[in-house]
Length: 409
Ligand code: AMP
Ligand code: GLY
Image (cartoon, rainbow, N blue to C red; front, side):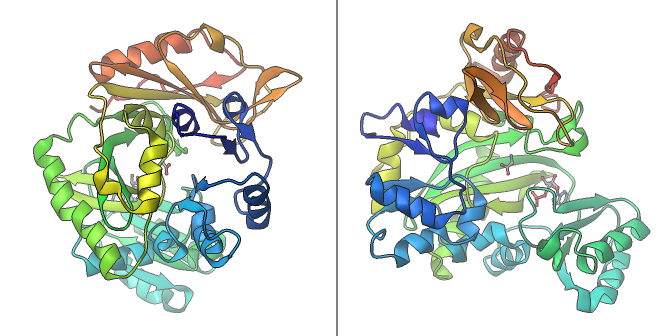
């Protein structure tokens, strides 16, 4: 997003908190945490910041937008991201399920349980066919969903989540839902609370290993648009999911100015909602944002002024793909501060930094997911070829990446 905002003639000055070595080249990095609202306030006032774009779910669920609205010194600042009440669409799986049922949005059938009705949870599991889908209600950094084939194992995990606090307070409530078999995709919507724009679709690859095996990660690569999301299927998503979601927010009086990330699964030829996120995704952003031709500052101003319907959204027809370079060992333990070499040799691809920093003027790794290499092509194969060719030029000790992004398409 910072890369895109930087291209706007309307941009005055850009700050990123906390930022990385990539954002350091185009913005001023500020070492404050996203949940430190007082520090954010201080920065916004001292630098006369006019717009705050919230990238991650945590501060939204914690009410950063409300914090700005409730403070006379901050009320004039535009905040992109929903208020706390609507951020519960991501903050609570149970809230999201109830929202979907209330507004007749297709989703897996479910029931939710607490430690007080564990026995009912066991009976419910017995009534289902495997695999069993158990979801911690609250935020669990993408780790709160368990899919299990064995009934006894599912019962044991349910108990661990509810009684032993496997995911802390996030698993005080557990949603158990029907397993849906199909292929996943994500649709991104931007709304100002009145109108909305449907942004490009994307598909991400969450597992660490080839063929979608091994542990879940934040995301190892992404493709946009999703080839199987043809006009017919998109129309179904639009009428059955996007419109009722936007209308549902209005009916429930949930103010929303920001992105809605709708995680979907295609069952037969029908879309079902797996989850809502109240932000863009990573690495989906690295393929969705480059395909938006509009000035992003202008688009965000329209969100803030509730004039999004006046924006003519222009998308790049080409396919964008991204491949994430990660530290060896990720998503389990890994070493940091490995020197990254060869980035300057990349041609015809975009390098988006994630866990990177400068140490004594050297570019080094600073996280599990290190950088995403995005390329354009006439189809995803052509785009991927460019990303993989450029990855050959980049090196750091124990660098790892998926060599089969798009394998299932
Ligand atoms: P979530 O955090 O809700 O997106 O769930 C994480 C992942 O679990 C999803 O991306 C799906 O791959 C899988 N998943 C979640 N719910 C279901 C379901 N009802 N049926 C099948 N797979 C699911
Ligand atoms: N890539 C998944 C997410 O951002 O939640």
